[in-house]
Image (cartoon, rainbow, N blue to C red):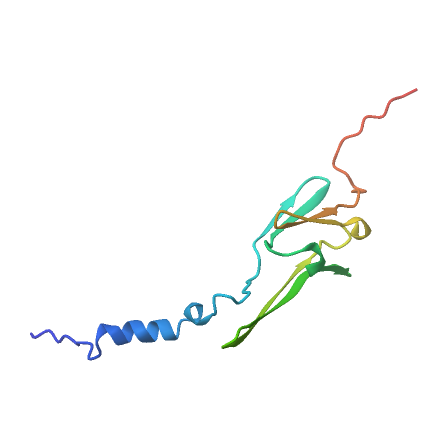
Length: 145
């Protein structure tokens, strides 16, 4: 029995060329502002939830945070425009960043009017206090007077 080998007719150069040309990461301009959905950490404590969102290079005024019914929305939009003029050329670059993250809050469990947000060192931190549990599982001792 004979083994049939299929040989690539195009030189390796063409494979590399087309792989690079159609690779979106190779197409982007190095000066563009590019942002994907930021990394998020969510931690539940007995009294609250803490959300940390990594968004370096932003300012607190770039963020929009809102709560509607039980939906917490965090978004940002930032535009950047650079103009360079010289004797022989003119260059104009545009950059645009946008992301939006939505979180469904546990119904009736969060003190929505007491949510706090702070942005420092590239991290947006949100504190979502829980409502006091009416049916607490904690045992209370009643002292007889």
